Image 1 (cartoon, rainbow, N blue to C red):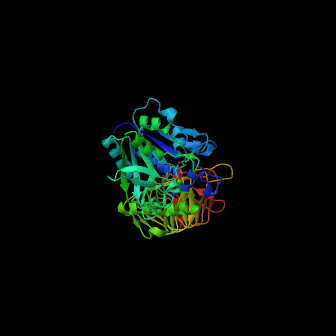
Image 2 (tube, rainbow, N blue to C red; image 1 turned 120 degrees about the vertical axis):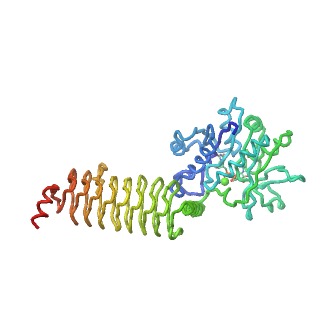
Image 3 (cartoon, rainbow, N blue to C red; image 1 turned 90 degrees about the vertical axis):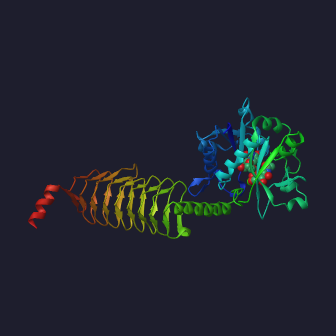
Length: 426
Ligand code: UD1
Ligand code: CA
């Protein structure tokens, strides 16, 4: 593919969210709205990605960090002005640019790839992504000429009665030849109705100068979906969750009731694992094959689970590694732990990983048996094959040797040899 760069427009205020947090940083299916668009730019292997942020949006700039280059739009004077703020970065660049909006997490990466392919193949000045949707709402309308070519994009506020009836809309995603874009941007005039510079005016300007503009039409109603309100955020969440559970089921995971299963983006689950209802699995969690998870389990970030692991009802696991065959069938909390293979974790077991100042680790070896209702006050090491008696409190810094035993409150620790002698006597 030819060289291209991405521009993500994200300077809008997001007033209707009624929030202190910028709109694009609100999370949907576990990830900020903006991250979905950044992921698309990455997927497309954009050589350079610019995120246009408003002049007060330090929070967005901080989030973007080294994920992309932040460009500040000093005053919010419309979409053409937002792109203009990137022009200094494009001096001397002869490739193509794709423009995306930062508040559209449902954009489909394959459609965008098709848009770029078409743009590069037809070698036109600009290619616009459009969608045929039943309710065109306040989107810009696509005006076609007698040959069915695109003639203009008319903003809802400026549209005539007939134009409002058009169902083909501007998604807000465009490919441009970079140099034509920067030249034509200079000619965009302030829109008298909205007192903004419209990027959409560029289509007519390019056509009037004899350049060609193409479109790629989709009938996916979600592609243009932008998050403007909390209601949009919730709707977006349910669409994304549906996509995520569908993908996992296609990959061989049983999800007993997708409607009551909440799995973030970027979760990996192996084949023949069964997820029972009311389970929450956060971003980045990895689960092996043939596990059973839930009902009512919560797996938090940093959790990696091997094959044939069982996590039952009201089990919560955070920042922990759990090896194959280990079971935690009933309620309890495992945090900052490394747990070996075939470990039994009894009902109500808690790793007390936080002492109010810092978090500490719990290490449990293979084949260990942790009795019900026990508390392991981290840092604690439970050797392989060791046992913790039911109701014990293993205090900070204790190391139970392999095959040993800890029992009582506070727990007394016995060696493997001691346990053997005791067993002989009985
Ligand atoms: C825009 C399009 C419209 C299209 C719709 C798709 C224009 C004039 N209209 O309308 O045809 O159907 O998107 O969603 O472009 N932004 C800035 N700086 C600004 C203004 C906006 O960065 O000064 C960003 C916003 O954060 C947003 C994007 O540009 O991510 C689109 O702006 P918005 O005001 O939402 O445009 P629409 O009125 O929805
Ligand atoms: Ca919008």
